[in-house]
Length: 400
Image 1 (cartoon, rainbow, N blue to C red):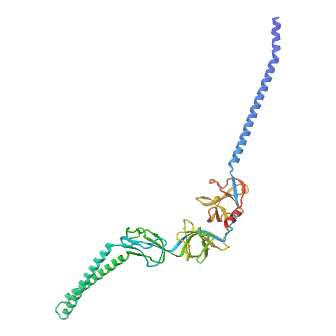
Image 2 (tube, rainbow, N blue to C red):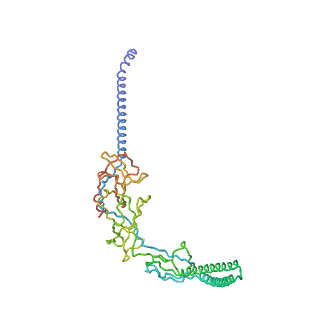
Image 3 (cartoon, one colour):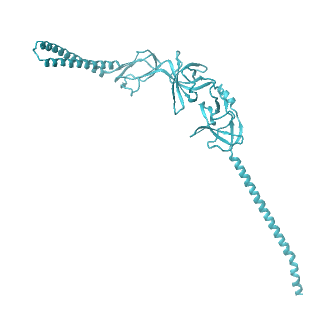
C-alpha cells in the first residue's frame, strides 16, 4: 500500500508545476509590458517638454513697417533764444555801494547811470597824485629857467658846453617826471569815474546783485552787479543734424514757436553757420536772428524752430523710438524676414523726436522692424512675429 502511494504522488504534482511556470512567464511579460509602456510614456512626455521649452524659448515680438515721413519738407528742431548783445557790468574799482538806480526789468539807455559807489581811497590817491603833479610842474619850471640862463651864459663863453648840456638834460628829465605825474592823475581820475556804473548800450536790466552798503571788489572774478541785454533783436542757436546741414544755409527762412504763445509763430532767418560738425553731437551749430520789437522773445527761452527744406531731400522714414538699439556700433534696428530670422542693421538717424525717429539710411519701407526688441537679440536669432503695425497713422498724427 505504501508503494502505491509513492507511485501516485509525483504524477499528481506535475500539472501544478507547469501551471506555475506559465503563470510566472505571463506575469513577467505583463511586467515587461508595463515597464515598456511607462518608459515610452516618459520619453514621450520628455519630448513634449523639450518641444514646449524650445517653442517658449523663441520670443514673440511685434513688428512695425517704416512709414514715409509726412513732414519731410519741414525740419523741426529745438533752439535756444539769446539776446542780440549781453553785457555783465562789473566794478572797476573797489568801494561800497552808495545807491543803485535801476532794477530788473527796467529799460535803460546807453550811458545811463546804474549805480554809484563810494571809493574814498581812490579820492585820497587822486589828491596825492595831483599834489605830486604840481611839484613836478614846479621842478620843471625851475629847470626850464635854469636851462635858459645857462644857454645865455654859454653864448658869452661864461660857462662850458658840458655845464650847459647838463642843465638842458635836467630840464628834459623834469619834463618827463611832470608828464608821468600827469598820467598818474589821469589814471586815478578814470578810476574815480568808475564809481559810477553806466549802461554800455540800450537794453533791459536782466539781473541785479548790487546792495546798498555792500563791498564790491574790482575784477571779473567777482559777481557782476548788473546784466544788461539788448533785446531789440534776438539770436537763436540751433544744432542741425549733419544730414540736413547742406540745406540749412544763411538766408533760409524759418519760424519760431514758443510754449508761452500757443498758436503764434515768429519769423526768423538764418544768418550764419559754424560750418563745422561737432564730433560729440554730430550736428552743425547755426544762428538765426529775429526782430523783437514787442519784446515777446526773452533771453534764455526755449523755442521750436521749423525750417522749410527742399522736397528733393533724401527719402526719410519714420520709426518708433523704442525700435532702436544703441551699442558700440552705433544705432541699429532688428529686421525680421519671412522665416522669422533676425538681421540687425545699422541705421542713420536724421533727427530724434522722442517717441519717434527719422531715419535716412539702413532700412527700407518694406522691412519689418521689431518694436522694442530684446537687448540681447543678434543676427541669426529666430522670433515669432505677432502682427505688423504700420506707423502711417501715427506718423501722420505726429506730423499734424
